[in-house]
Amino acid sequence: MSTVPVAPPGTVPLNPPLPADSPSIPSGGWMGLAERVLAGDGISREEARAVVTSADAELLEVLAASYRIRRRHFGDTVQLFFLMNAKSGLCPEDCGYCSQSKISTADIPRYNLLAPDTILDAARLAAERQAKTFCIVISARGPSEREIDAVCAIVPQIKARHELNVCACLGLLTPGQARRLADAGVDKVNHNLNTSARYYPSVCSTHTHADRVATLAACRDAGLELCSGGIMGMGEDPDDLVDMAFELRALGVESIPLNFLTAIDGTPLGGSARLTPRDCLRGLAMMRLVNPASEIRVAGGREIQLRSLQPLALYAANSIFVGDYLTTKGQPPAADEALIADLGFTITGGPERGAGCQSSAP
Ligand code: SF4
Image (cartoon, rainbow, N blue to C red; front, top):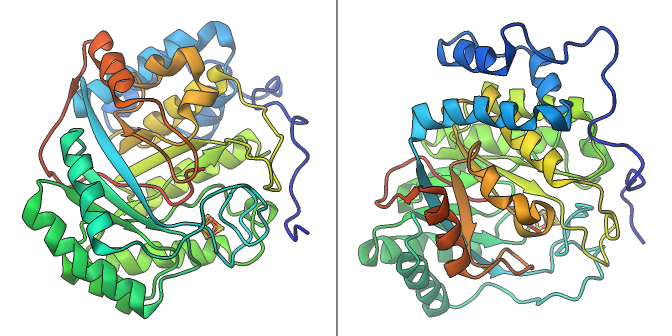
């Protein structure tokens, strides 16, 4: 039985009417807001909330504003990321969105850490698909010594064979573990905040938001880049999304994956389906306006929640995962390549630092 108190799905619309004292459109309009962000003035919390709660009729202008910023920092390039679920299921934590948790009865593959050759095969596939970053993900509260040893041993082999960044997503880390990963050549660590500190107890009871922030701090101290984002659609309200976006900014996170909940049967959030594609686009646009120079990734759930509006997401975001997610299928790589080409965008290559992965892709 779930120990996680989860908000009932479908009860709180993400774009409720604004209170009378909230600005619906910033002075100078959405493009004026983009100009102010580009000038370094930043965006206020109220303006960020106005983006998330903006009307459907304003969506294209909101997206255009976020695209102006995305274009300044990333041009029309798209970075691709490839996830490897190197250990699946069997996790002692109780994250309500996750099919791999101890309280999930979802029908997923469950296996311990894969053999090195299997991980190397996946890295080769990532390189063939033009991915810039290979993400090694394990389901765990945190890694065992054996798991840290295995990751530290495989990373130099991956880098010797391929022009790939490597991101490790191993759960909570101690400062010593973070240093070991950095010494082994890991470029960055993913550890998602997932939602606001206020809402976190509604989705997990076995660790805290503060635990996650402490892991990010340990990684930063070890010289690793940070990849951290969240999940929309868990019953949070607009203020929770805004809080998370500003916390990511305060932490200086280089790479922000934004997931859209895939409500998997057998998880506490199973059966909920409350996002619209426009909600997802507003969330991405807000994330871009608050974190103008960060890489922003359209992450897990994009095919299901954005549906026919997927291409529009890349006017705010500048990266996507190719291939499958942790326990759910993505669309075929050829479909992603066509989507990018149809936009007139190009896939970036090379192992520049500044990318990452996600721990909580459904
Ligand atoms: S999100 Fe990570 S820590 Fe939480 S249950 Fe899933 S695998 Fe475990």
